[in-house]
Image (cartoon, rainbow, N blue to C red):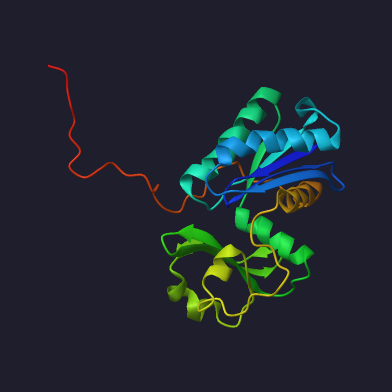
Length: 222
């Protein structure tokens, strides 16, 4: 197996290759506004580091969010295009699950929360019993509305760092953003256990930021 993983649901544009046993190459850039420019070069660098070609990929996994509409769709569309061109399966995994898995690799154990920045003074978040077990559906909320629900739980992710009043316990050394290496490792582990992975359907959780202007005038030809 040669699994290509990519994620653009957070400011991290991240790509990794996994051979079924371990991550063999990974590339990440941090830029919340240039996902479309950075993703394909990151894929190229990762393939070059691994000494292989895109044609050798046998599986693809993409972070399905939640995340801002524009950035998230870059990864999903790219994964779908690669899958169609190569004729290989494309899977989707919750981006928060990848961050949770990375937190487990960094030593976090027991119940905790993952929170990423959803903009508009909100966070995307979910609760976990451990690094592999999510116990709530991904959601988007104002941090102040979560304070009682996450009280006493360690929290990881950039969203937790942004709102310390709501997320009081943020352990040092934990991931802030997605790592495609962690996403690939989680997917490879699930596939090795015979688990069927979800399709790559986006978790937007809310409408896009772009809106039709107020008092928009439709011009029709005479």
